[in-house]
Amino acid sequence: MLKRIILYLFCLSFSFSFSQTKKRNFRQREIGLFGGASYYIGDINPRKHFIPSHPAIGAFFRYTTNYRYAFRFGLNYGTVSASDATSKEPDQLERNLNFRSRVYDGHAIAEFNFVDYRIGNEKHYFTMFIFAGIGLAYINPQMLYQGQYINLLGMRTEGQTKAYSKYQFTIPFGVGFKWNISSRFGLGVEWGPRKMFTDYLDDVSGTYSTYANFNGISIPGTMRGNPRSKDWYFFYGFTLNFRLLPPNPQCHGVGFN
Image (cartoon, rainbow, N blue to C red; front, side, top):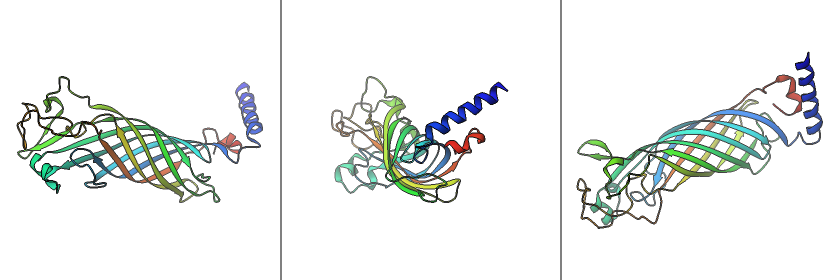
C-alpha cells in the first residue's frame, strides 16, 4: 500500500512539474548499434580522408532529456592502417613504413539537435546534430614485416626511454543526421573524428634510433615522423537505435516514454 502511495505521489509530482514543459522536456532511453568504417590520419597518412577504411562496429546507450539534447555512452571497434608504399611522396616511399592497429573506442558524448527531435513523434521526426565529449582508446600498433605482423609497442623503435601506453585519452566529436523510421526505431548517419594526445597510434613520431633497423632507411638521428602533430582516427557510418519502454508504464503520461 505504501509503495502505491509513493508511486502515485511520484507520478503526480512529475505530472505537475512537467505539465507546462513536457512538450520539450521528457525522458527517453534508447539502445543502438553502429555499423560503418574507421580510418586514421597521421605520419603515414597525413592527408587522405577515408583511405584506407576498414569495417567498424559499435553499440551505444542514449539518454534523452530534451527535444534538443541527449547523452550517449558507447563502445566502437575498428581497425586503422596505412603504408608509405601507397604514397606518391618520395620521402615516404624511401621511408617505407607501414602499420595497422585495432582500436577499441569507449566514449561519453553530448548531442545537440539543430531542430526538435524525438523518436515516435510524427512532427519532429528528423534533425541534423553535432556531438562532443570524452573518450578512451585501446590501441596496439603492428607492422607487416617479412610477411608477418609484429607488435611495435615494446620495441621502442625511436629509442624511447619509456614505452607509450596502449590506453589513450581522446576527444570525440562530430556531426550527423538522424530520423525516425517507426514509433520505436530511428536511423542515423554520422562522421566522428577522435582527437588523440599521442603521436604513436602509428608508432611514428620522432627520429630513428639504433634499434630501428628492420625497415626502410634507419640512420640514427634522422627524422622518422613529425612530433609536432598528434594522430587522429575516425569512425563513420550508420546507427540503428531502438526506443526502450518507460521504466514504469504507469508514468508514461508524464513524459517518460
